[in-house]
Length: 367
Image (cartoon, rainbow, N blue to C red; front, side, top):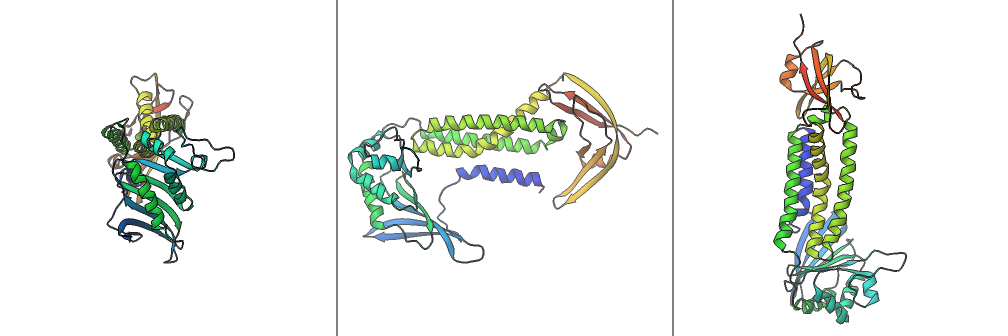
């Protein structure tokens, strides 16, 4: 497996990570799952420990407390970042300034906002959980209340009474009627998975091209700058659109987070393919023939196999750029060519103004 193959596989795994299941109850060396009973009521604690390299003592632990709830409640509570000036309240504040300044609520269910405005006990239960600064997120979805904390291993766990006080308060809210969803879940799933499939196809197509376009273009760094600039602009615009589209909907917020990694890779690959295709469209605007000779050939061996190269004589600039002197070739061509063998390069000026090598031909050696 060469470096490019390893990189392509690694990127494929990376962009698939947001789509993998969040829980794995088979256990591992660093994870621990246990059921705890409190006053004949059970809840699950998932623990993931981080260890120092030179010690068997855990440094910190990520705990997720899970309690069963009615299935249709879908919301998320997060701690708001500290601000120097006055805090900006949410679009649907509860009227409790202490709650609105500290807690960010993500939900598109109107019943949730109405309940939070009327039920001070629920607001106080949420504030009491977040009073423990190790708590990061409170989330209700798919019939489960999840409280996520990250803390030093020696700190105590959250009290069960505190957890069930919040669970009982939210259980009353979960019995409220559920409004019709803005977007059907099936459409949301197709959107995120469709983007993942497109990104994987682009990655496979990029790997299958054998990166010939990179050594083909004389102004390759200009091409790269076009790709990066276009990708940054498209990615920034997509982030703004996704944030506006997600709004306060928890399912849409998850789709938004899933899209970040595929988009960060899809845009460079898509623009690379588009720019190369447009720039190398036939017929070319101008074409120049460059005659050269093989200076020498060589191969490099690594753990993945052999790579074969040929070095050409120096020649002058064409369309303001110097043609590449070093070319990677296949093994059969490597066996046929020899030093001082004539080489003809056909260099064209692309539609985007980027000169590229249209073809390279090793001619028979003149006797």
